[in-house]
Image 1: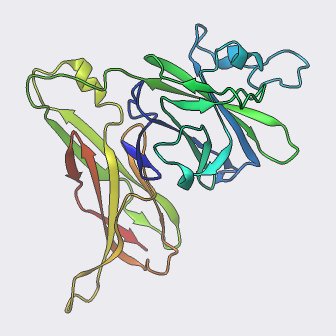
Image 2 (image 1 turned 30 degrees about the vertical axis):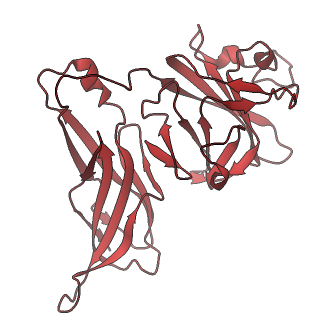
Length: 302
């Protein structure tokens, strides 16, 4: 699991369940830089459908003023399983919230949390008096279609992503599951004043002989949770005090996990506390209830 404003959620690549809280993130970049559009209008959730193509949910009628956007008939027809609308900061999200909203995490980064009990409004009718309620979904693949307006007065554009919901997040075994986890820091050197994503890759190996391949294959997806990172700087003069300075105490803020279980942490070396020298990076994460500490990786800022 990961957290969203301190609430536990499952990221889209972390084998979310049909009845859990699924975090669907959306990153917006312009010219290679995270940026905010004028407005993120809505997020529509659709089952993958028979065609396997999101076109069936869009208005593709020639000459239509809504061409390329979610067709207005989708909500009335019941094909829209959930519609997120309204904007708020991530800090406004609490686990007990029942009103759907699109939350801004930071510049260019947004998210919605799909969970049973959310109420949503048909945007085509604005029927706030009789909101719909999202209960739960069946196992399968889904589209999340984000409608975004880049500039005030500009046209709206849809961005289409996919996610999958599972019911095999609970498994039964007749012996303890033994998993070996190995991690590696991708960077060795960073130039001073760079702002980079530190990348710690992760590999898992299930060592049980009697565990089926279907269970072993679960560990090809993202399975680590609650990742945190710590950074210290080795002192040149170790004659007094501790031989290091703690640059970043253990934190999960700003730490994310990719679909391949790579841990990312954005580190700005232009900070006055970060000087040229040798650093040590270590991560902590949870897998199968065990707190896993990585090796201590050496990193040089030059």
